[in-house]
Structures are given as C-alpha cells and as structure tokens.
Length: 325
Length: 120
Image 1 (tube, rainbow over the protein chains, first blue to last red):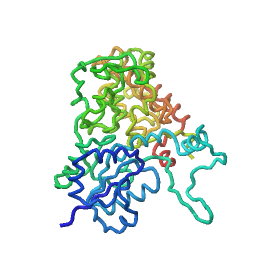
Image 2 (cartoon, each protein chain N blue to C red):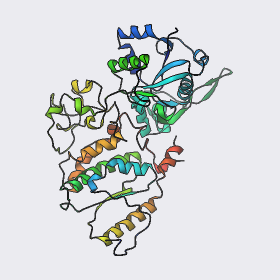
Image 3 (tube, chains in turn green, blue):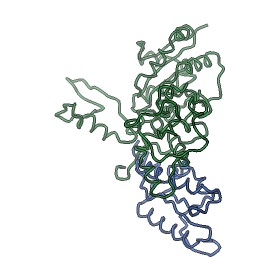
C-alpha cells in the first residue's frame, strides 16, 4: 500500500511553524516513515508543477501555515485545497491571521511608504515601490500582488482542522498527526486544543482570588512581573481568560503573560471584545474619570487584545472613512 | 415610560432588551457595528440604582476601553454612547435617542462591511 501523501506549505509566516515541525525531534522520523512528503518548501525541493500534477484529492493532508496576504499565497492554497482530502490550518497565522495580521491596523500604502521610502536604512533614491510587473533587459519579471488586508486561511479556502499556537507545541502536532494517520478525528472544523480557557490549567491560577481589582495596567516594557502571582492580579495584561488552553503554559512558565496565540475560547466570538468584557470586573474605578484613566493605561488595545486574531475578529481591520476609496 | 407616555422618538433605533447594562458584552456592540449598525446606545440604570449592585458599574468600566479600541479601528467614539436612563425617564430616553440619531446622521453611515470590502 502506498503511503499517504502529505504537503507542508507556508504563506505569510516567520518560519517558526517549520521550526515546530523540526522540534518534533525523533518523532519526525516516525512521521517521515509513515508518510510520503510531496511538498515542503523549507526543506525539500518540490516545484509548483510537481504539485499541479497530482489528481484531485490525491494528497491526504496539507498542513498550511502563515496568513494569506498576496495573490501567490492564494493560488497555492486554492490548489492545495483542490488536491487535498484534508487541510489543516497550522499555527496562529493560518488559524487567526496571526502577527502578520497586525498589518490590518494600517494599509498597504502606508506599509510601502514606511518600508521602501521613509525607512532611514533604505536608500531608494528613485522611490521605487514593489510592482507586479517590471521589464528588465527585455524580460518581464512578475511579483505577486500584495493585498491591503491580511486574511486567515479559512477566509480564503475551506479548512478542516485548526492547529493553534505560535508555534503549535510539538506534542499537539504529534497528537494531530497521529489522529490523522489513524483516522481518529474529531468533527470537521475542530480546533485541536483544549476547550477551556488557559486560566483553567495555569500554574498561577491558585494565586488568583475570587474577586480582585486593579487601578491601572503595568507594562512589561517598564515593569517586571512577579514570579508567582497571577499576571492580571499583578496588573499586567494576560489574555489567559479569553484564550484557549492546551499550549502547555509555555509563556507563563517563562514569566511572560499570555498574549493569546491559541485564539478565542470556543464560546467567544471575538477574543479581544471578550477579554475587554472581563476587564470590566477588574477595574477599581467608580467615576467616569477613574475608569477613563484605567482605560488609557491600556496602551494600544487593538494590538494587545488582537495580537494574533485581528484578521479573524469581527471588525477584521482598521478602516478610516477618509481612507476608503 | 417613553412608550406608555406616547413620546415620539426616531424610528432608527432597534431596542434590544437585556436584564442589565452589565449584560452588554462588548462583543454585542462590536458585532452590531460589524453587522451594519451605524451607532449603538447602551442605556443603563443610574449608578447606585443597580438591582444587581454592580452591573452598571461594569458597563461603565468597559465603555472607555471599548471606545479607545474602536477609535483604533477607525470607528468614531460618538457612534457608541453610554447613558444612564431610569425606567421613569421616558422623555430623557426619547431625547437621548434623538441626539444620538442626529450625531450618527452627521457622521454618515458606517457601512462597515462595504468599507472593509473597499479595502480588501
């Protein structure tokens, strides 16, 4: 019997998810034994034509990481969807939009201006910006079209399963791969992680009193959190209450508050708004002035509350009336 | 009271009754704006009057956080208003609805979905 074909692909990603696969250590050898890898741009030299030659549904599973933000990503993921029986959104970027999704705070034009014109380390005297077509010595060179709005994978193609995390922890990758190989899968559309919030398994949960209040937020840039206390009680934004657990509390154990990479809990429609709701009970203020100063102590609420989930949030991006064409 | 007193207020408002302003999860407001509403009014009991003791204070604490957040998304703070209006203040309710309707009318439609599509 031929081995099931597996593809890995990356869109707008940092490469951390590829690292996570390598972090499987010896387990990766078992996986490689059990499957035939047909695409893995970071490690193996397969070309577009190789993948294009496969029949509809011939690939058993495609693991796609990274958010979708240009026309080339779109072409690849649509093709992989057609050729694959299962598509797994691998990591926070494919699942929610991730860190590249923070580009939705701004626009393509602003990004181009900053990156190619205003940046002091760039010498671009002719003011050239990325173009989809350029003629060089009689050859027409093409670049993909960069989108104004970054998307999560399921905003572009149907996704069967989500493997959350930035990056997904090796044990949850191994579990997911085993579940797929053995056909022992949860309902389609499931997020392969805990159904409960991170707080449920947080080692600091015991230090969190039933009720508590804080005057204002403290920032990691200027303050060091306590080594044992619940971060929220200590005044630091910790997304734990609104974030799905199952990550192994890696950040917490490194004395870093949760930043929300596992995405919203199953009952939360919007991770940032849900977290904001929970903050209503921790502020101490009674008057409008007090609650305003509490709110103002949370610098950059959009980037903090939607650090990993902006493209998949209800509002998805910044849109200013004056910027809309 | 606005209804039983036959007070007139603009028909632009769709009332959604909840038990307490503290029940208004910011998600509801965000969902309304994302789904086509041009503005949202959260009307709660006066501070100190809460049947659940704390509910309206919670609404008040969330409000400026949400306003700051919406501002970053490009949604004008004036579109979301928090007001204390007791059950007996029918005229005040009608007045607030009139004011908010005019404020939102001056800002123009939000059309969030269309705006997003225009920036795809």
